[in-house]
Length: 423
Image (cartoon, rainbow, N blue to C red):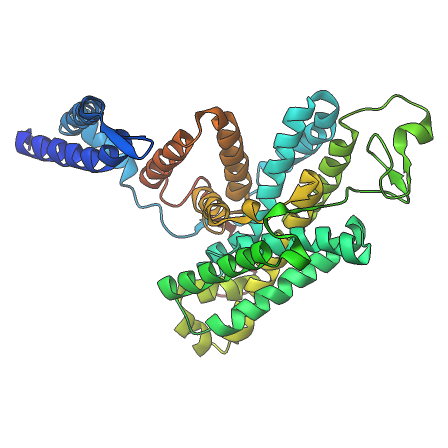
């Protein structure tokens, strides 16, 4: 039976697309502020609406053809759930991972200082994505105030150095513990909350942290910010001049100063920490605590009926995810050398959440790929200002259509049935 061409449906889709384009582009493009006045630009709005309607008309018309129906069926396939691999499956990552490590070791000696700083920022977002992936992707707890733990780690290093003379190595574990305790403090009041209510409370927590840092002038220096120390090894510093009473590396070795040396050291330590966090998260997801997180995400009532302590399961997810953000905050502070509350706004939480969603909820590899993709995209589009947020929104919409479960689907290796055991 041959399906007929539904021209009315094409016109309906075109008209709806034009209306949505008018609602979106009208206030943004059609109204241009001029001091205290504004100018209307209906021509630009009409052009954009016409382009959207033409594109939607062609797309809908193509979808009415046999080839179009076959092409759109790819996007409508059921891609939900966890993909179970055969018991004897061997991941190709066992060949790719050593190559990535070799390239990562050679990268700081081949790249410019600019690209080195960009990759450092990518690795920091990898840490943030891995931590939030535990809370949102595995435990299913929507956290919109995750940037608060990030700020605790960063300010922990800066203020610990200013008031207690604690350096990078001392504050790295301390900041992780401080962020984990903050995660426990946040976790207790929200144990009975779900969905939108949980998101609102965590959003408030992140804003409270930012406002405290911004207004406590006597302690945090408020919006003026505070400086953070760099990484040192046994009194050896990597800057041009010694700031902490040590000896610069180039003076110790009698060589010329390399402006990228401090960034190379930050990159090296950060890369090792990311590898350690990846390994720990990989092991946690296969331990009983990881299974408990997934059980909580799928059905909390069934999780409690099976005898699992949902209080400890939630708190463990909040605390481990928060500690990872605290570690990322320490690296961000030492990478920047100076921090202020403006670096920890709500947009940062949304960006990290987008990294987790685009990568795939619960997928470690997807979060790593998404963190690099999003950070590089934001950096390459920096000169376009706020337009990059429009590109970011379009990317999110396309991803939700093309890969609703994220870039990398969660998969798990099955277990072989032992001999003598009935299937």
